[in-house]
Image 1 (cartoon, rainbow, N blue to C red):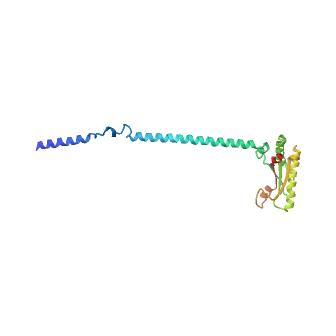
Image 2: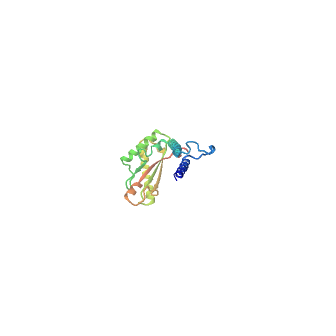
Image 3: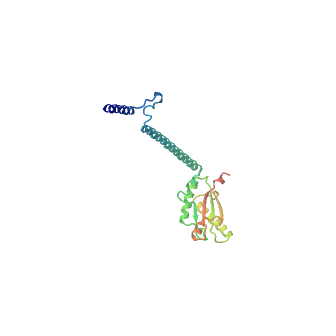
Length: 206
C-alpha cells in the first residue's frame, strides 16, 4: 500500500512539473522581444498621436498666419486704392452736416466738420466732392427738393470760405426720397435733415 502511494505521488509531481514548463514554440513563430508588451504598444500609440497633434497644430498655425497675412495685404491694397479724402472720412468727423427743421444755416459744429474736410481738399487739389442735400418727409416733394439744394449750396459756400473752389464740388438734392432713418419721429426727422459729403473723383477722370 505504501509503495503504491509513493508511485502515485511521483506521478503527480511529474505532471505538475510538466505544467510549469513553457511549451516549446518554433523559432519562426516566436514573437520578437518587446512586441508583445502592451505597455510598449501603448507608448508607441501615444507617441504617434502626439506627433499627429503637433503636425495639426503647426498646420493650423500656418493657416492662421497665412489668413492674417492675406487680410493685412488686402487691407493695405484697399487703403492704397483710397484717396486721402476717402481715408479721412469718418476717422475724426463724420462726413455729414445736419440741419434744423426747415433750415439751411450751418451751426458751429457743422462749420468745424466743413473745415476739417476743406483742409484735406486744399492739401489734395485733385480731390473732388459731391454735396448731397436731403430733407425729412414733411412738405411737398417740390419744396423738399429746393430745400435740399439750399442746404447743399450752404455747405458748398462754407467750403469756399475755407479755400475750396466751387469747381471741385457738385451739388445734388435728393429731397425726401432717401431717408437715413425710417419713421415719423423727431429723431428720424433730425437724421434725415442733412447734407452728405462724398468723394467724387470719377468726375475728375472724365
